[in-house]
Image 1 (cartoon, rainbow, N blue to C red):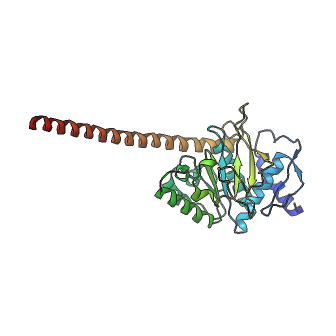
Image 2 (image 1 turned 90 degrees about the vertical axis):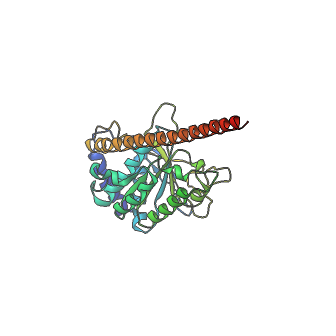
Image 3 (image 1 turned 135 degrees about the vertical axis):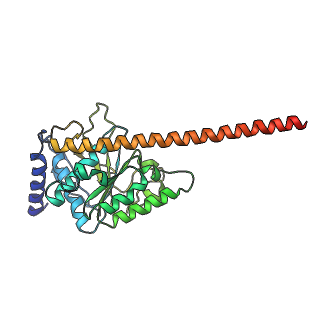
Length: 299
């Protein structure tokens, strides 16, 4: 990295960590090789904190260079996808403005889409060079189905429009192998995977960048074309749910009610659908009984 870039990263990361009462990331050295978009390898040996800083700066620079930043974030249920996305959005916000400006508790609802129909609103309310995310509940429209889905087509088109606005977009998904081919063919630039840790450690993930000239997926759905095909690049992130830092905790406390309200609305929607289906079944049974009675009378 250049001296100017290193100094800039140091200033921003210093603000982020200085504002936190949490311990700093572990300082052990790890073997880490960064592959750029053309597959060229760097032999740098970095800590997880330095890797974190590298990708924060890279995302920021790509936005200002009119390049896309679409990140797939995936992992098992409860692994910390929402926390990781909050962490990425917060750090990019500080990198852009020098302090939290857009990703703050009062504005958080305008930066997260829990339903596909909320994506247009997020697009309109998110300024250029900022960030927003599409929650796992909304990305069901990106999953592969046996039939053509208009919602899927609309969501893919919206994501393409978001890319053109120089906005970093984080998309939470349960399993990348279930993505529809219409999306997974060419529309992600990075992926962040939170493994299923047996010890329950949910504060680290692996990140890779798409490499030019490689396919996105193999035919069986396995990843291909990212810089971590053979070597994962680890970074760590704060657990906002239990953070002792007031701002990070405030972000989580603002996010949690949004998530719970969406879940309640989803339950209500499912209940309405189930009742409508049951009503239809009951109407069919009634019609069958009436038809049977008419046949008996006629006989």
